[in-house]
Structure formats: structure tokens, C-alpha cells
Image 1: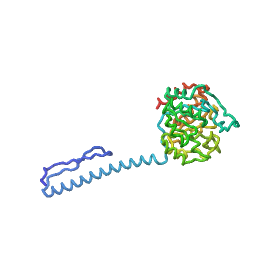
Image 2: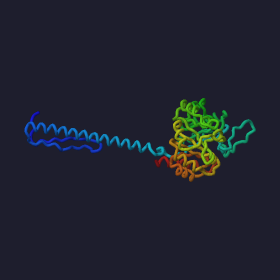
Image 3: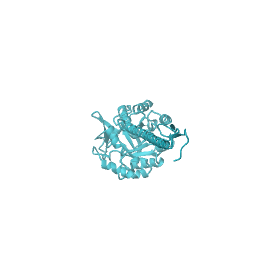
Image 4: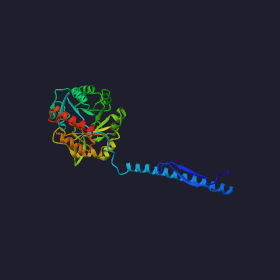
Length: 348
């Protein structure tokens, strides 16, 4: 090695996410004999390299600790992350024997012949299901649901007409099973809504649920978790909301079912169709624990009720309004609700 000029200095540069770019002036050589000069230079270079490696390892360790701390923050002791979407008004089209109606859901029965009593009807429209679908399409309302309150051919035909009028803009439910679910998607439904097929004979049939996911995909499936109070808890009800299942809505159940569905639809059956006000306790439960988008229906009578849902659901619960709307014979202006919906979207 050639002798270096006396008083020669070296700079070591480091670059790390913790310290930033920096240079270290720590090596200065002074006149020495040839042997001691070479020895001093070797030792100094070794020390420089060691310090550089130490700083680099320290930087990497700090980054690793930062990543681990973030992972722990999100995985321990936290409720599910909030759903990043605007609070929405979800329109509806309820079809009974081919006609658009508003019915008190808890009065529906599986009628056989003429022996059963008729359901309590709040309103029967002279407009077709397709006309309502066109109205919702005009106003840019998505994620509404078409519910067939009966498996008769007239109701099915009316539902198809609505789907054709607004392809991709409506969900459909009522008698959905593994044999017919794909046909509704092919006719234009964005999602199919299921309840009784999955909650069969009062119990959840996981095999049927997995079959539906296999056929249409999780991203096109909505689980109807409509419920009634039983022993102080909300039990999922099936078969025209007449039968209690053994499934109760809570954080654990919703977290599990979210693995198989894109959304939940929940009617507060105890208040649905009665225009008695909303079930705030149920809305709060959904807002706190649903890990996927959820829509509440039942009891809305005024604009104040929409604000109550917004507050109780922590702006995480969408809302459906039926009998109260003027387009269904009620006193609440449809246009006013659409304007409210637009304001929610703009506020995000």
C-alpha cells in the first residue's frame, strides 16, 4: 500500500430511514512511519466498517419494530375496522302476487288454499315493479332490494321485469335457493338475498350456505338476518318471519357469517311495516358489530328517524324506507329522502 499524504481525512456516508443521510468525519491520519501508518489505516478502516454495519442493523431493527407494533395495534383488542362507505338510502320493491305492495311483514303466512287469513296490506300500487326500478335508476340509487313475498309465477315475472329495467342496480330475494339463484344473477340482479334456505328448520345449514357461495360467489350474496326479540336477544326469523331460529345476532355470529356474504339485510320485524318508529337498539347492534355493509329496514316514519339511524348506527348502517314513503302511500316525501341520501354521499 502506498503511503498517504499526512493529514489525510476520510468520510463515511450512511443512509437509513431512522437517521437519514449523514456523513461521519471520524478518520484523520497524521504523519507516522510507513509501518505504523499502514497499521493505523487498517485499524481505522476496520472500525469504520464496523460502525457502518452497526448503524445499518440498528436502522433495520427499528423498521421491524415499527411494523410489528402496527400489526399488534390492529390485531389485538380492537373491534372490526369501520366500513369505508357513505351512509345510503336503499330503495325497495316488495311484490305480492305480482303487485307492488307494502305489507306488515309479521302478518305474512304460508297460505294454503283459502283457509289462511290475508296479510295486512298498507298499500297496493297501480304502478309496476319495473316502473319503480326505472325511478330508482333515474335517481342513481343502488343496492335496493326486490323482495318476492311469495313464490307464485306472477311475482317472479314482476321481479324479472324490475331487474331488466335496472340491470345491476337491484338485489333480489324471496324463495332463493341453490337451484334458482344463478338465474336471477343472469336476469340482471347484482346480488341474491337468502334467509329461509340457509336457516332451515330453525337451524343454520352451513352446507347450503357454502353451496350458494360456490354457485354465485360471496361477492353476490346477501344474507337476510331479519330478527325479532326473544328472551332479550335478537333471534333470526325465517319462513315469512314466522319461525324463530336458534341463531342470535351478536358480534361473533356476524363476524362468522361475514365470511360467506357481501352484505347483510336486517328487518326489525317487531316494528317493520307498522310505522311506529325504528328499533334503535338493533341499529346500534348492527353499527357496532357488523364487519360488512349492512342495511336496516323497519319503522321509519320521518326524516328524524333517518338521523337516528345515522347516529345509532355510527354512520355504518344503510337504511330502507317502505310504507312511510309517499310513493307507497305514506307521508314522507320520496324526493326528500333522495336529497338526504345525496347529502350523505357528498359529506364523505
